[in-house]
Length: 371
Image 1: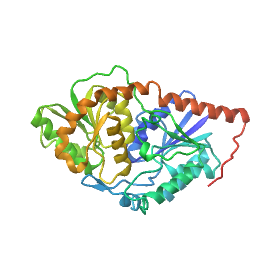
Image 2: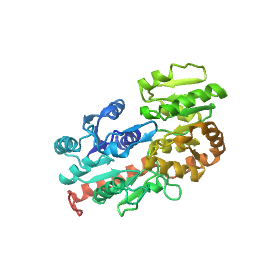
Image 3: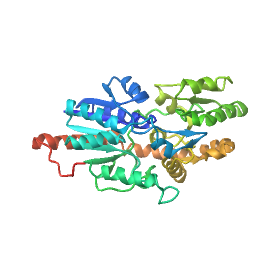
Image 4: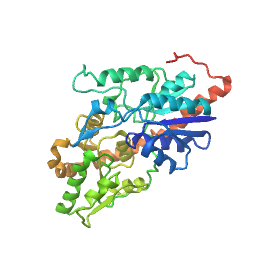
């Protein structure tokens, strides 16, 4: 049987968990990816066939601040081109199932072509500034209109009360929590004493990387900075020191996480999931005005497995690192939960059960309205 996996390429979080999904089912299904940009290149390194598509959104921000309106309303995204492209690919490939990780153009196309579709997401709602926010709430309402028409909405997170994305989720009848969907084997965890920063990817987070570099030199601890950009790495390398390792890109993030003492993150859901599955305490510094990241950071802080630091308070970063050292016990508890709630095992079970029903009936019967 054939499956199309369509990936939102904004940040690597969607990409990495879709790779985990593919690794879980590749022995039983033929897989074709739809992706774009760095996401496409990253997936190809794992040996999968990837057809290029177009972005629906393009993340925008400046000086640590996420700009939601500029992200939604800019000329660097083109939902119409994405829909046209994905329509041609899905119609030609004729998959038995489409799985979309926050790539809603593919959901629309799948329903139009009468293909069953699963949606993977960690956000279909958010507690933001005002309930009447003219951008956030209409957007979420529209996405839930689509989500409700999927056969399954998959949440790659722990069940309550340990759900990291709890404040970004509104329950739906077709929703299921499967546990973290991560690429890595989290056995044989160690601690080499270094702090690992996985902040990288967007230039507007540069000040965090710069601050970590300078603190490592001043307070004599080791730090590894994964930049996600050669340009950012080059700027950081202006100041060189034996305590600081600058890594533009890596394909060995699992080894870096496995032996880290503390992980510094921007609040992306997948990065938090991976860190906690390794049992690593976090310092989470979400982008300003990024409701999803801020809500994730809040939950990490409440669970006691990490520290939430506001970008405006970077002068307190050293204090946050010291506090994170006291979170190790609860971070290890989250790792023990992953042994019970393993997303790769659960998603394979869900897909197998679903496709077995298709094979048994000979034809999938659509009970839901087509968009």
